[in-house]
Image (cartoon, rainbow, N blue to C red; front, top):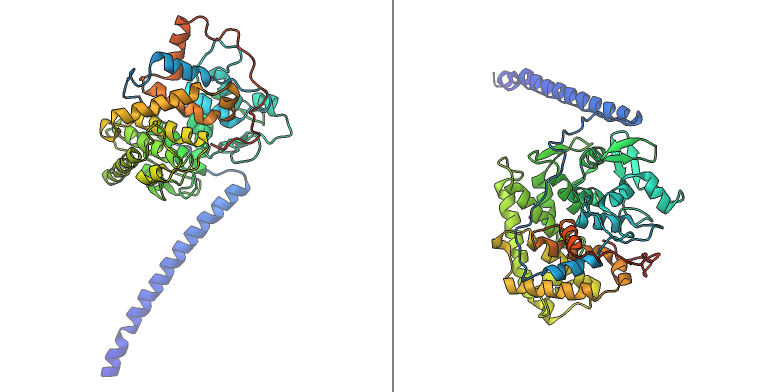
Length: 429
């Protein structure tokens, strides 16, 4: 009897095992079929993920919050903006320089100086292969790469490339380019900014080294959409991007870690604009705690003259043991901190006297540079101009248009720009 009871459960056990094997087989077949389907699509040059429907034709803007003429006078702002006008050599114009200039000045920028590129001229250089070709020639790989699913951008440290991933998209977006802005590819096709955005969304990977500009570019186009899928079918959310920005030690990231701070601050400001939140309350709490920590650190690491060093994350120790910085590294740290503070709410602001000292140092430093100096490190000084304009609750192009109208001598009798920056390879940014 005992033996018979012992073997009664065998048929049930076998049935359960068979059901499990069949379920596994069905799942395997389904997944294998999906993998095969996608492989065939890749071989045919197409992947049928539908494009994301973008909810606007014009990108969002993160409005400045403060107008402090005691911090930045009209005269000082004009002096700084005069220094950072986009006066680049026509031969081998660096995309990175144009991207920074466009971000600061906007697509609507115009100048009386015949050698300064207008906002639309800068956008055309980046988005019209013919304009790029006229500057770089056919020996250099095109900046734009036409894909079946969109338009990619060549980026990295190769000659004539955009230096950082999604940097061009973010700069064009902050500049106010329209979603239907034409893009002319090396294949003689007319596409649009939407095609650049769609390709960027498909190509994005959370574990990339640099995601600062991806967060910014997507954040100004997508809300209230807060999730999408890349071309591997992985769901991406703004929570994931925020968490990615919080990873790693503070000095890590581009420009001594300061770009991550600006992108996180932008994420909070964008989250404030919509009833349907972009990020969860848990992510928001973590980001705000991180930004408070940054504020407390830079309150202790600012030098008496107003600048921050490249080792600003060391707090008070940065004062006791200063980094052996070249001037441009101090410009990087100081300009970027003043910039993110300009879009920060009151609770995250430094004491007023510290911000004023920083602005005074930036103004004096920028005004003291020759045009050759500015051209050599243009990317860093462009942040100075943008930051100071934000503190006057304006944009560089808006302010400069009014300034030129009241100062008719501006932009006259200027010299042509130099043929190239004095250093062959300026610090990447």
